[in-house]
Length: 482
Image (tube, rainbow, N blue to C red; front, side, top):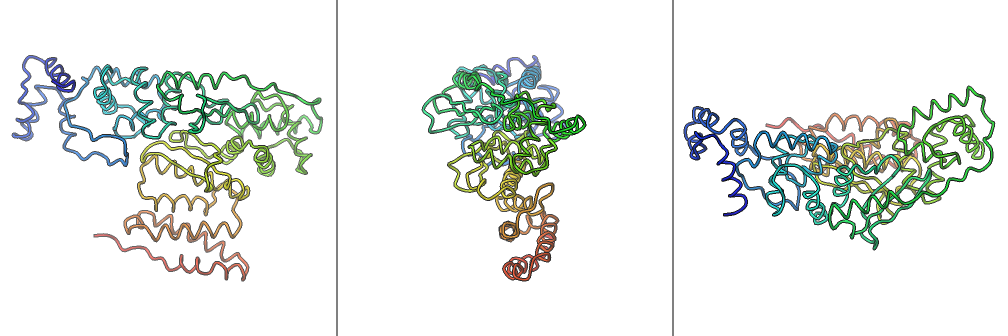
């Protein structure tokens, strides 16, 4: 008898004495009355699972999950409740999405009874695991190689760091897989002693080896801070207070504050006090900016350029995300600079599910506005994947729309703007009629913005982009479907 069969027999043996194994067949034969009888005999939870088997499951384009076999529940109500409590005390919603992907349940970010049952199914299919719906150390040790086989190493990093309470965010810009790294880990530092940890293939043998590699990467001593010279005296007390208030309100991510302090040469403590304000004013003076101690957009531009020049792109990415309030931490596993990415950027991940973003060198060489737009575009893809938008045409159109509308961001120059507009138009035209109808409101917003930029252009510029404008004008809303 197989493990699954033995488990089912065990579940059945625990039912009350009046239970009859023929109840499911009677429920199907006798309709509502049969269902009521079935509920009385085996309990509402089992009926719920049985009836759900007749409903279509959500379609997930996941290449590495085997087809699920319908079966009786592996957990009873008390076990499900225990698994839910265990999970919610240890994992964030981001980790929950990863675990749901691994177990093959709906990817919602909420760990419920169905997720516990899916984890139990995963455990049941892996000999040696206790079937309890709880993702503990032993189950993690199986899930890590599972993620390696799926080429989703950042999934493993997330759930292991979460379970073992390893802080990979407050002082770390990125923890990511590096296939070319021979060692288990490598730690580098950027502005403000912010860590960038790379993990090699040998770190991913199990959850235990991965935990050790992350811990060792976090334990590497940071370089000694060197504070050069006494505090400048360029600001009044009122200006120092105003600068501290502005910076504290604008940069809410501790890592951004540390990066700024590293750039201006003050002690990296993430507190924007008088010393940081004065040294920021000194930085502004050296770069021909208004010396008010406030890291506004003009100052940020210079800081990003300096970070990029000195090979500290990860700190630059974090500053941009924080200043322009770009985030979807509920679905973003990692964002980092990757010198091997040949395009501006790339986003990878399951749909629906969490994603990984990589910004390539071309993302930086296109200029400040282009870099800001590229990061915003990719984070829009993260949100789209989270909610499960399967169409690449829809995703790319919506990503280009973020750049075209430029809400809360500086606009790109006309050439870059019409490059985006042309790609958005091509993606919209490639959609199905149903997709066009669903996104028609957004298309009209985009068309209005394209018209505004076109009308404001010179005659020569209009001639260059007339075909794109004509293409937008020619688009009509598809008729309502049947």
